[in-house]
Image 1 (tube, rainbow, N blue to C red):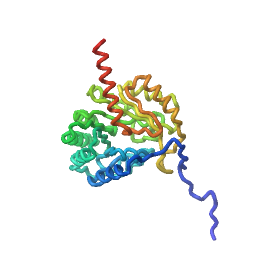
Image 2 (tube, rainbow, N blue to C red):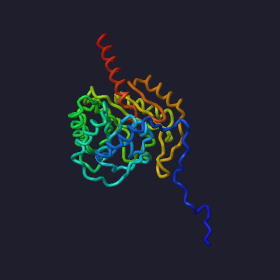
Image 3 (cartoon, rainbow, N blue to C red):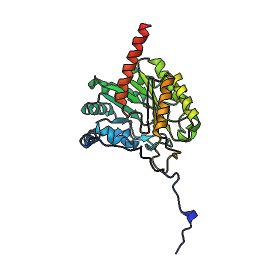
Image 4 (cartoon, rainbow, N blue to C red):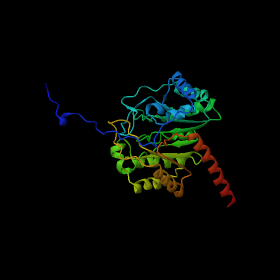
Length: 312
């Protein structure tokens, strides 16, 4: 009988850390949850809620909120933090814009969030497809506000302008982490390319709200997070989301530590004092988490700012 030596036993690459008691997902209405699932499946759509293993899926789907992920479920990049599949994507579905529009109507969404995988294989990175989805969704959902969460369109020139011309209400592109971790966490991306994308969107359209997000717990330090805030403010970003990185599996980038909710509150206070219009900061905060409520707040604050300027 062969003896298995301890040193020869394969161990997990990055062991998972036990979640603290403040990280809990919740389900509010099981009937609505399954109705949302039924609508998504019937229209043969992908959602980032499912593909990225979002911890808030139960709560959001219970409210009949879903974040649609267009251009397939296979990404051309392999970010170390992400649970979306990496590989060679399929062809674009020409019927996807109308499917998204119909699902938005069936769910009766007042605010819809549309994101995508990275499509470096496409000449424009998928910008034209994004535009078609926005325009088709608005055609039959005239009262619905539209938020897009886009890739960085790295090395795709000004292709992002096609999306801006379609006039989404919110243009979101996540910075994800601090510059020093990019080569390990986002090897296919470039920090300042992401900052410049957000800056260019705001320069092209002052009426579109811009938004970005960062994950914490990857090994960044406080000063680095504050520098990211300053960089995003230089790009005139309106809305910042700050959430806890949750390691999807032993094969993903290692979670260094869980931050306490009080630390997220501190970052929120600092970010607001620096000048962001809206800041959502908590362990379970994600880009589209409570996006409808936050958009309503942004509109009120923008209106109040406009009134103040008129009085001056």
